[in-house]
Length: 366
Image 1: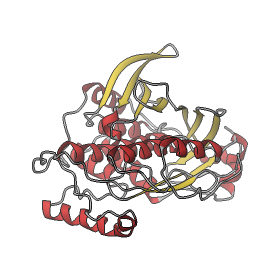
Image 2: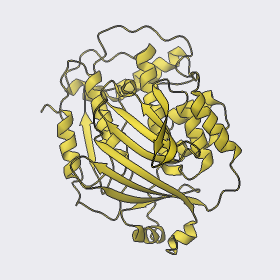
Image 3: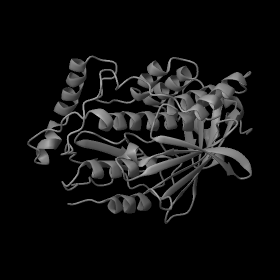
Image 4: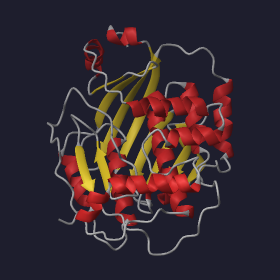
């Protein structure tokens, strides 16, 4: 069965609403995979694993939703939303690319001065932090469906609770309905370190928060071994697709784009979780400042000065872009929009974040 982007979008609209960002990541992942696969057809999308009712009390976060470089990509949002797995053959590009200079896969590029300056201001103004958790209210509007609101509580100790009504949060806490995963903690930890730490090291930590075959920081031989190991794990999928010549490890700009895709995705995930924590905001901004394919422009949103961060289509294999709007003075995320370059966004999410006390939320005092 040949699958195109609209097949996935259709199923996303019919399934239960995704947690904000999950829809966006799913769409970008598929688009990127389709582009990278070149002339070879994209085949076989597995059936929706959880065609849940339109509304559920319990939602969970996105799983693997990054642009892939091997033969298997998982796109999903877990129990209560959508879990759609796609098996896609990614054929190595036919046009040779120049080899990357030694160490270029891990070394931090020159930083964007606007983001670095804002991160510095946030760090300098960081006083005592009230509360022990971040409450993030997301309103997500996907083309063809009504806006959907979720209430997410991210505690400083690493727990994660999310419901689709405000009144359900106390019950989720009391019932120990913790949906946190190890990757959540690694992303947030990397963002915290990046606030004042070495950017080279911080980039590696954030990229490696999720599994990847890049082998950052390793020798060329070890990097090749990491790629070969990942490729071996995908051998069965490749055989099923009739791929006789395994994809070669990309180099140069192609490899940098894939690495920066992971960096952007993981960093934005950390920002979505810890938006009310200034250290996390500062760290994410410093990390994003190192991505050359992210442009930063002054803007105005709702009468307040903002910065518009555009993750260009180069990060998503040429067919999608993500535009993140943040407060120009605090770095707080305000809006995220995803769609094809130059066209009306397919998905728009707005954010409202605040510091709260877990005890107060549990008692319904928020």
